[in-house]
Length: 511
Image (tube, rainbow, N blue to C red; front, side, top):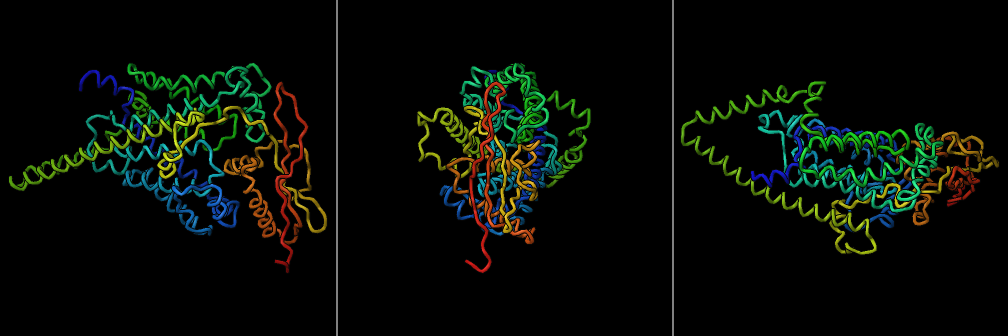
């Protein structure tokens, strides 16, 4: 390989063992995601829940989307689809028919994400894109059941258009996140983290400890902003690649662990941590193999011996038959090379499309991307937006009170298991959410443009309560938001009671 070409490839070459670790980690995240989602099969995916199919199609759908989960509004069908998706994810983790399991896992992930976009967050976009690029990566070559049938690779270093796409995708994630944070609290005042930790809906214990220290928060704000803006450049430095990658991985590993300790972000931090694994250089993998990671030489020794034995048998066959087999083998090699060239061109074309999409997301006023060009992004869910806490941090903090009035005039809070209504702020607002999917749903519930979703949630709560406690009938339910706007300099606003939705229970005997 010419020296100039090798110099260009250096930043984009990945280790096959690291790709295997990426596959295993993402499959584990998929299984975790499915486990969390499965606790709300009826609420989030069935017609009896908070987003029935007719509301989804009327408000959150494009003609280019698809979803197997929209084939039925029954939670039992959703449960079956979840089991199928879990089977694909488990097979992907084991590396069994890896390419097919990657395609099928991506298909099921897109399907479930399209079924309820009201509970999605930035990590879901990243998980979807990592699986998408994984379809073009040989991440089943190591640490997989598939690898048992193949000899040990002559070299663990791998370069292709897909490795370029993977690295560019990671850089776009952080660059666009930083560029979208163009509010003064990120770029001038350094108060963004102060406002983020003012949000009781996502405040975690370590964040509560950091919150009183304004100067430290200011330093951490600028540190986060410039880390996202500048650190991705390290991925494209063509010399001392291993050193720069370890710097990138180490800093972002600590960065996302810090986020998980201070803010309730669901699987967001796990997805980001998993995304870093493919960047591990050979030196780091050698250390891991010495401290617990099974060495590939031992895992694939039998496969190498098996392959060598078959080649020896072919060579011992009668010469015409041996030559015919070898000619067939070389013919298949030629076909594979042609397919690989087509795949490389496809991946590069998709990468250009995604870069174009991201540039348009940070400069929407310039209209670089026409609506007619977006169908491909919606069809294959290549659409992405990395606006975490951007352009400024959300200020409308508060907590929900599900204020129910019983038929005998009592007022109960369904958010506290039917305890008498109390307007005081809970000691831990974040504990009111069963999981991050519900937290994200409640955040979307506040927006005026999502007003269509409010009655479905209200009626769902009424029905669930009446099914569980029919002895305490409810006449009316109000979804109340105790709005507490985040103010500067540790000022505390008086909570304001806002009724977002009111629904009445059905009267027996009346339609």
